[in-house]
Image (cartoon, rainbow, N blue to C red; front, side, top):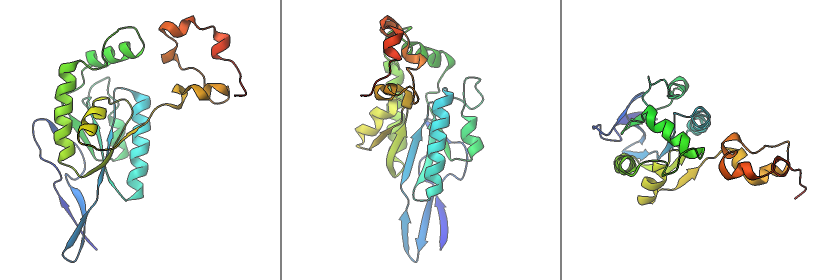
Length: 209
């Protein structure tokens, strides 16, 4: 079986490939070419835990050999608040999208997430620009689904194009896990605001339910 690489998306000011061959693997059997579909793993690389989870998922999908995998992110590789180098170290195909994530925006998202500030996670003007660029990116690839944890704009752009979205969350965020103290506890990110009004004995209760 011969293989060939063809460019799967346009290179423009809104996004660009940063590693690997800029192409989609095509299997050539005679005159027939069967193009593999792509799974986009959208990663909030300003968050270490999120990045590690997404990279593990992307690596396993890549090993399966059924899909192409592109890991997308918004934080510049050399930024001190970026963990995108983990993607590079794993040897995954990746794409840095724009508008780039700034340190100020990352800190703002963390503050809203931890209820230290109120408001939308992503300001509307940035969300709108992200969604428009993501739509262009997704249209230019034969995408089977988008996998993401906290790259929130992809929940909008993927659904606009009727592309399935797989949401990956930390297990400690689910209340039913709290029923068994050997599984998980209320994470620190939830120990803010109204949660502080709940007695610790209730939060850490053991239950047979």
